[in-house]
Length: 315
Length: 255
Ligand SMILES: [Fe+2]
Image (cartoon, rainbow over all chains, first blue to last red; front, side, top):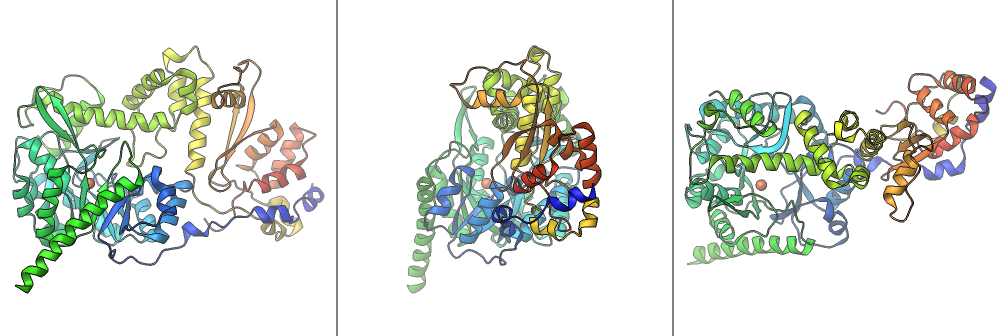
């Protein structure tokens, strides 16, 4: 037996030639600074190649970390994209609003990605998806009560302690509201930030959807968010659905940003200043040019507001 | 109602489509749109989101049974086995077992093995980026110790033995112009692996299968001995060189 084994495995040139370097995804990227250009886009599978091969005037890219917990193609492309752009990791799977604690395994995977890719922002949502043994893969609604606030803050704190950094928490789109709330949604968001030191990821389209679906004033909502907490903004397209002769807005991320939402964004830029802003598109993907054109619109709004400010200052 | 109870009932509303109880309905604010329409938005989001994610992982099954039939299996699966984690990459890893017990599919006895093949292909696609054992690594092992070498396969490597001609079924699904294979033409051993980014599916002889399977629990010497005992013609030098070329083995110590 031993004889046979001795002979078997001598180095052969063909083997050496096929050896590949796996170093690219194991090495760390340098720590992130805030991107110089404030507007980024969500990086999704259909655009991987285009994003790498095109020179774009883009500030940064955002991805869902859950899609990169494994290795292979997805990690490879994220690695290549990170060489060109700053990234933000926007979680959809922490289920921060569940009464149950955030999963340790999920946090461990998340932390591994943060250590490698050095994102400038890390975020998830003020919503829940896990109950008992089921994780429902959606951003489900929360009643805005003291009990919920405590549960959410416990999980935000656990997450921030585990990851060793501040996270941002995003306001949701919802289709039902609870009859017994102790506070408004904006109060709930402000308080979560005050209690945990987390920042807010303000999704302007979600605010618009909420205002329509639950009958309140989107401008008033934005006017009541404490500017100190806002670390990122999202813009996306929603869709209109007819239900019993009425219109319900659904946060489908499959359209250009609607005109009214651009108006609301301009109002938000006036209030919060230049904040990293993302164009999100998750279904019925357009060409990369369409996405970049949306980002250009956001940049134009930021530029106009800044110009106005300068003019006012000069007067 | 306490938050954990709200979440438990909301989950049941999504997964068990029956009329929610009155106590549950009362926790929501009424508005112009009936509550059932608004709850349906969540039910549809969850079921179609998970359904689309699963269906995308089973293109061979879709080809064999059609989108509608696959959809009905997938929806029944989601209700019976909702995801247990916030990461869906490996969701559906026991779908083959579910298919085996799915009454309307019992007349297609090879379906569970086709599902298994797709599950393993998906697992290989998303497997960890680990490093392959190199020829130099093996050359560095003192000859007298080779026998005791623990050769472990990389995270992407999977073996599948089926009594159905899976390889022919797969080829048929991928190529419209091929004739349907003879389902009773015998079984196959498959090796699924990912040297770098692309997943490879290779038909391997029974002795190679036995050898690689043996390495899961045995050191190199005993694995070779056991294979030769069952397959006297096993040419392990050639086989091992081929496997090294495939980069099947894990570089030790780093992971
Ligand atoms: Fe968003």
